[in-house]
Image (cartoon, rainbow, N blue to C red; front, side, top):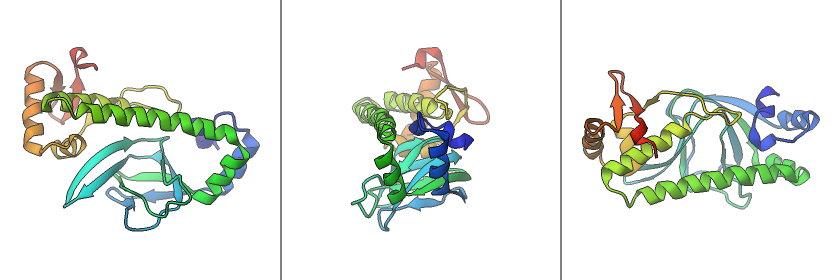
Length: 217
């Protein structure tokens, strides 16, 4: 109940209704690297991340292009009841716990509580704006693209359930950053060295990246 009450999509929903919603949902633990769904099989669930992290990506010829990274409190899944299969992959990047609600049950909740639809639309609108910024960054040069993506990831990984920003360390491999920026790993490594030399970022011995004030976007 505490988890549901602190999710923004359920804002304004009474505790009695939240109890009903909870009876139709269940928690599931997943190991790191688990594919929650793929474009090759039906997926009819809505997921909320209780703990851990998820990446959403496309894959072609063995190359992945990550378009979103989701943390605790994020909602994802297939929201169209007429869409049988996803268009992308969803995979855990660390041990995670997901709250799972069957799509038909989720749609019933929205039908009876339209205020939830407004909350969901606002959440999706913010996500679309974030995707637009990511697409726009593709017109920048490689170093600018890497810097923009680092700032984007830092913001996304510093969000709590209540929408408050909390400082979390940003640690990402060069290979993973390459998947986020659609650049090759060698280019990413070169860009990180350049950004560090120019004072845009700091990288400690553990690989944690800190953005300097001049790197704020």
